[in-house]
Length: 218
Image (cartoon, rainbow, N blue to C red; front, side, top):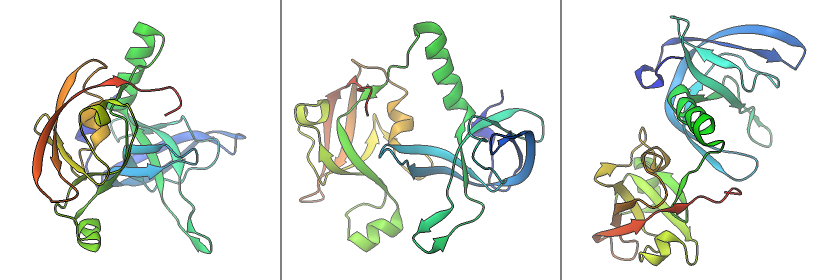
């Protein structure tokens, strides 16, 4: 297992899996098309910091490795997007969980028998300069908060809907470093400092939040 943090866009990769559940050990080749991608799943939960690649993958490939040219596993294939919207097809949009994330999850499972994740208690959308310009937001990066869970850690600390979290403990949220990436460096019970662009005024404020435990259904 290699380190996914060394991947670069344009790098050659290989995917291995059981295409359609029938053609075992199918090997396909492509390149890394993008890093730090966000993807909405069918269950409504968002996936962040995904590796986007164009090696052909099909049903049955999920859980198969994504390898670099040194034969190191740099990701686990998880999803493919074939339709952007009704009538608009897409090609070459495969997504893999980075190996660094996989190693972290595997270590927790081995040590504890379960994965325990910290919880802020917010629903949000990652923003970029294009989204910020289109929606006339006061900052061009961060996590735009759509909703705050009543009684959750963020709500208790005074975080509000329409706030934009721009950094956690001074580490900036960007297109390559997502809120989940930073948050998962901590554990439940830790206190973190959120830097926030207040949605109503654009004023920058900081709040201290004590993280809870992420519910199993979120």
